[in-house]
Length: 474
Picture (cartoon, one colour):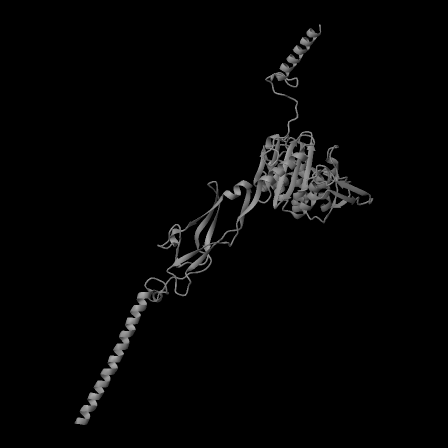
């Protein structure tokens, strides 16, 4: 009895071991099928930055502010709805066209915004400076502030007593004109606040380009970085509190990003989560845009694409104007010259944003103008031929990366170099060919002249003696 029980237990143990070793079944999933509904960590590159395909945002981009160069993009030219990120353009137009310190009277335009709009809390007939209107627009994302700005600027620019709707339409045209000027060519705006309209759209790239122009305006930079402000109603004196919902700028929020210098949020059910962010780190100024991101994903996704860009790119100054690129020997120069000439870069400072790994691959090549080269010039030792004039272009400096031409800069002479004269030819400088022979010939000629003078003196004395002898003899 005991033996049969032992045999039974042994069989169960063996069967269990065999089942555990079978590769076909694991965690309840059938063999040969992929596991689903499992959290997979973000796939990252060597820098730890999230890769483009991991974003929930439908459109996204990072550009370098000074050059406009795209460092990262995901469907950056797809037309999407911008929601309240539209207000970056409205603020820019207000800062460029308006007098920030002038008082603006709030009109019935604030009653034309949808009931569920974000507001700055403006009241009809209230008087408020344009400066505070823009701050209410950017901090509290006030659609009422957007309409008030639009009507005021439209009437000011048109110099006409436009109706409220005419002014709003006029401002929308100003928005489209300014957007195109910034390089936003795939956008169309119909209102100053971004509340959903099928004909109101942009792209991630276009928003970044608008932001690029806007960051050149000092007041816009101030407004876009301000997260809180307390104001007072004009008549009652009651305190009005404006607070930004931008978590990247809030130092007390877990989503805070230390390199963010400003930004604008946006959301509608059609647009999804939208965010424009300005950031600076290690001399690199970036603008990031995410459009139609999933709920509460815009913060992390913005940080991720910014960190990806900061980790992989660097601004590199390739050359500076006035840099002496080389000093060349000059042939046939005048005797009062020293026979060498410095050649400088005559172009504005130039640099660009490069992948860090590419900076060491940047090549500089000088192409000299053969017209000004000496017959003695070689590829390894170029030589100029006088005369050379200050500012004369002697060649170009070509900058290439992986065989592709990036930039060219003219190379010019820093001074004049005169050519030899006939006298210079007859009296070459010490060390020049023919100098020893000329010295030798000159010495022979001098000796000949001295001998000739000596003979003449001796002959003259002889003639004189002979003359005296004949005279006395007679």
